[in-house]
Length: 107
Image: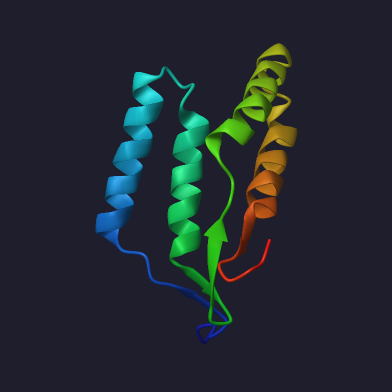
């Protein structure tokens, strides 16, 4: 199989490691409440290093806009003994995609 020329990723281990450590620390020291900010940090790193047909992506989501959804999803997952996680994962992915755009976009 040949490599796609439409999608390019140029991220490196050094910047990923720093971002991942930051995410772990913010999640650990806030007892999980900071996880939405950690997730947004990782998504921002991924988008910054991803190009689609030569256009760089950007992630526009923030932890504050995710925290209410995250708490609701967490409560529903606990109440349903994990069953809601089958809906939570796609919902989280939908939120991530809806907050990803091209860097040079006007919106």
